[in-house]
Length: 136
Figure (cartoon, rainbow, N blue to C red):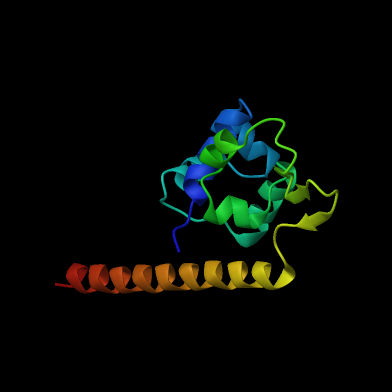
């Protein structure tokens, strides 16, 4: 499953017309951290992703697994049969359904945690190799 976190955070920074410093202040982060997220050098914590999704009224699923910029461009204005707005699907028959079930949210969270765990394992291996090379 491809992650769109970096791409979407960059998009939200541009969309909000904030620079990395201003964006970071909203979420109690510094601009370097935001830059690291956008450059895919670091991954935000789940709590940070939740704050971002709440602030911008998007689902975690949208933030993590969809190119939000393309999704936004593909939404046709005035299409009453299929309008996605603020994480809620409003269909032509006036029924309202949440886009992401709690089970799906659990799956997204678990996938994200698994990805972070694998990345941490890779970092640990690299540190081990660096330490071995430094001792020679």
